[in-house]
Length: 265
Image 1 (cartoon, helix red, strand yellow):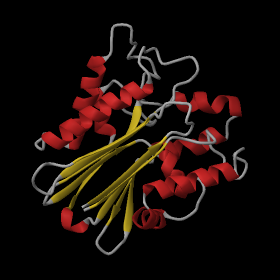
Image 2 (cartoon, helix red, strand yellow):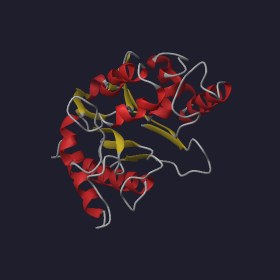
Image 3 (cartoon, helix red, strand yellow):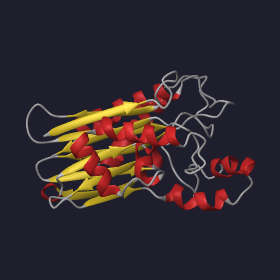
C-alpha cells in the first residue's frame, strides 16, 4: 500500500485550516482517511472562542478514531458522533447556534478486505480509481448548483446570499455543531476489488481541475500517481501566481489552503 499526503496553507503567515490524517490497523488490510477543509470565518467572527484550526483538529481526530476503531458504525454515524463529541468540547462562551460557528467540509473513506466506503459533505472531493484506471469523482454538488444564481447578484450581495443558504433546507451543508447534518452527506460503498486507489482533496487542491482547468479528474489522478501530492499543490500555486488578481480564473482567494491525500490500495 502506498500513502502520500500534503497539506499546505494558502498563506504561510496564517494557520492552515485544512486537516488530513490516515489510520492503518496493526493487522489486516483495512484503513481510514479523513480530509477536512475548515470554513474561513468572516471578520466579525463566529460567536466562538475557538478558531477553525482547533475545530478541524478536534473533528478530524474524532472522525479518524471512530471510523478506524468502530467498524460497526456507518460513516454517517461516525460523522454524527464526531460532530456531537466536538460540540461538547466547546465552552459556555461559545455560541453554537451562530451561523458561522467553526465548521468544515468533510471527506471520509474506510476500507477493509471486502469493501471501500466513502462520505463527502460540501465542496471537497474524493476520487476513486478502478483497476482499469478510470477515475470517478465523488462530489457533493449542492453549493456548485447555487453559485450561478449568486454570481448574478451585485458583488456586495453574493456572500450574504450564500451565507443565508448554509445549513438550511434547499441550501448546502457543512459539518458544524449539529450532528443531524451527517444525514446530508453523499455516501456509498464499493467492492474493494473495484477500487485501485483513492484521492481525497480539499477545494484548494481541486482548483487544478475545477478552477484552472489544467486537466480532468483522470489527469489529476495521474499527476498524483506519477509526481505525488506535493507536485499537484505546486502546480496549483504556479497557476495562482500566474493569475494573482483572479482575472482569468475568478476565485474567492488568490491562494487557498490545499490538501491532497493519495492512497493506493
